Amino acid sequence: MEPTENAEEAVKNARLNGNPEAEQQDSAEPKVDHRPLPSADMRSYALLTPELKDAYFQFYKKTYTKSVLDIKTKEMIAVGAALVSGCKGCLEGHMKKSKKVGVTAEELAEVIAVALGVAAATIVDRSDIANFNLGGLYEKPE
Image (cartoon, rainbow, N blue to C red; front, side, top):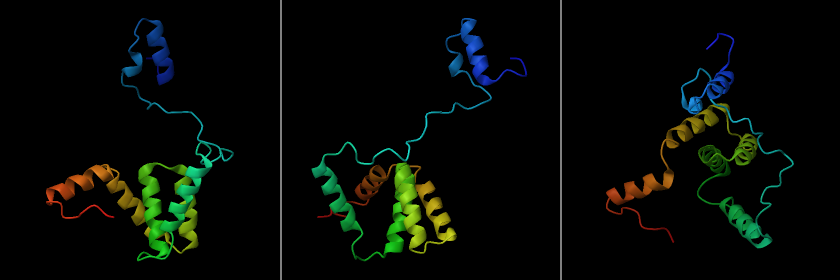
């Protein structure tokens, strides 16, 4: 490869020279997905029926009613969940809400660290396995 040739050009040239597996070879540059992220004009919940959308929002609002967890804790949990699930809109919305309810930069950094640790494994799978290994310590919630 010539010093001025980038990875994309190298793959193109390799294909032209009869190497169809050129894309699978190691290159100096990682592959990047250049598709744009969803725009602000995209409507959330656009594909849900009105009934399902209403049911979802009733459930969502219920999770934010008064309970044993305060709103600040719930927002920190929501940020962590959004990070792990990969929901861009959720993450941005809950980061804004967390700032409004007083989550500090230090607390947010800890939330991110915890989410990073948890992201190494799927949540449901690991919790089911742990509960099974503990002899069914927790019963299914009602």
